[in-house]
Image 1 (tube, rainbow, N blue to C red):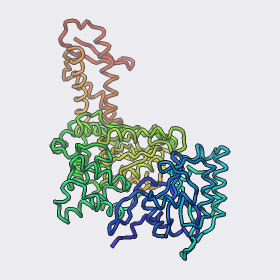
Image 2 (cartoon, rainbow, N blue to C red):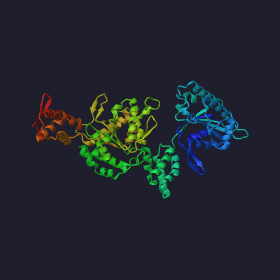
Image 3 (cartoon, rainbow, N blue to C red):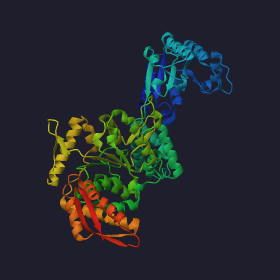
Image 4 (tube, rainbow, N blue to C red):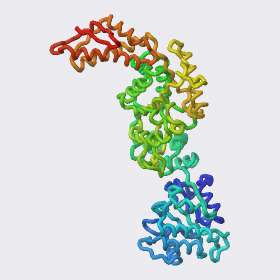
Length: 612
């Protein structure tokens, strides 16, 4: 037996309101297919076909379909039906259509709504294109819409001649992309005009369509009932937010690319992000992740706890277990990390290292400095302006970047500095893994790793408007982690009033420790190696740093660790690299293979380096 509950709500409302409404405005997902009974099976059919099946069951004889490009045609295109409609409405069809202007269309609308020859309906397709500017109508357009509004109020339900059926309107149905494509006053000032929202299919509808479409996948005939049922479930889960037309396109892609019934997720991913290859399933990536902890700790010194938790989350991402506890988590980002801790301790460096691990190039990550998005209006730059605003057709920096590189690490630096309204957009990304820009194009984040960084919790407000240090470098890591997590929770729950954002991030908060003195020595040693390497690469010159010089630099560069590794680098640049460059300029390097630093001296806060 056919499940009639799968009839779209807008179509059920249309059928229910036929006795009391003379015109309807259907907007939204109007170019999608709908499930309609064919025999004892529900199959996806074009919207007009589904609409006709409903009207035919109400004893309607035909539809007249108008669009601004071709004019009027009769549906269904059957000789007897076309002949009747042509005779009643005095149509002069050529090749099945008749061009018609707005004035002639008004005459047709009046005649159809009053005709007692048969129940019929007029569909105004592409009605979004009837007016060039809905809020600035020219004289002809204004007369047309006023006439249509007047007709909506003057029309009456009819009973066709010789019929005993209940009285119904001969309705006019406007198909528009958005309600604002028609003059705002048109629907507001007439109680006889009903608005219908054509939404995306729900889970049950997608499941019913998937049962039909799964047969198109290679290997479907050989799969047993259990395998087919599981494939249907994954098909419906993975296509949340997509149209029935998209489901059909996915099946066609699977046929062309040879994706079997067991690879439904690959077919859905191929449709969403346009990539047939899935880097997340490559064996080389799993091999890299197995040894990732050592790689991370080598690049980011002194952050054992952060590196361990990061690798755990990364392993979960590679295994496809992100959101596995939920019924449907296939659309969520592959991984979400929230790096918190003092400045200069390696948060950005760790993001670069992850990118290097996964994609072979640390520069392949997409970075957004969220301090640039502190004002609400800057969200248009990041996510795309809303329809109707200047620049809405240009898309957004974030959505465009993800569409270009769906397999990526996306870094949102200093997330707490973004405007709260912009943060709201991340709810949709974290929960559904997608975002639609002003052009109506959808960017999918299902294959990306999102990394947020923040300095929250290091300093807090003391209640009197003063910033005081919440954690200190000599605090044990357990204390640092606890206080930073508490501060993050306080910021999102109470200051922003957005606990749902924190809830979406979950337990993916990775707290970084302060740079300890022993770690500072390792960081400085790595920086000095980089200086030696750079001189060798640029000038084929070996730089020798005796132990006393190294000890002096260690003392100078690690006195203040409040700015972390970045502070060590800044100090090294001031006390050594700048005077080193000055000293190299002062000597003749021609024919020299090495130089030795013999002393570093300070006079009037100016450092100098002596070379031999």
